Amino acid sequence: VQLQASGGGLVQAGDSLRLSCAASGRTFSNYIMGWFRQAPGKEREVVSAISGSGGITYYTDSVKGRFTISRDNAKNTVYLQMDSTKPEDTAVYYCAATRLWYGSNWPKTPRMDYWGKGTQVTVSS
Image 1 (cartoon, rainbow, N blue to C red):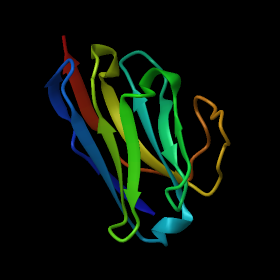
Image 2: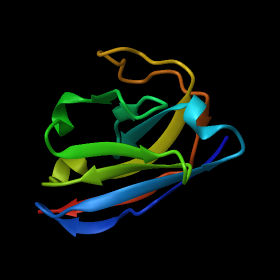
Image 3: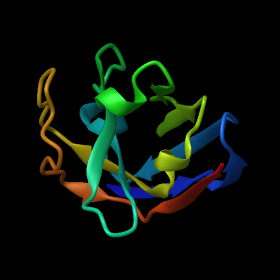
Image 4: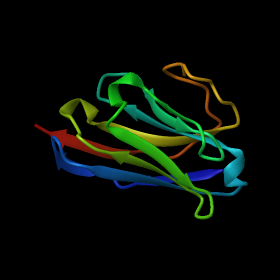
């Protein structure tokens, strides 16, 4: 699976941003998709994940109620809608794919099978 994330940019705190991740190469709906982020000086961490059908989602506590993950299997694309952004959301955001669902309590750094290149998100105060 080849993954390409896009949609990053510079926004002010409180603004919205939508990230997209386009996939190619395998049957997209067979894969659980995740969004990750890595801030300067910190390890990469999971932000959100969505099941193959889109019916099950996971959010890390810091983004619950602000971010929404979704997918369009007809377009082989997964999205991350980021609302009410905060300066602490500043990071490089990555999308990734796996065949394994980690349940309701994802580890901070789960094993993923495929990774895309990141897109920078900067939230100014």
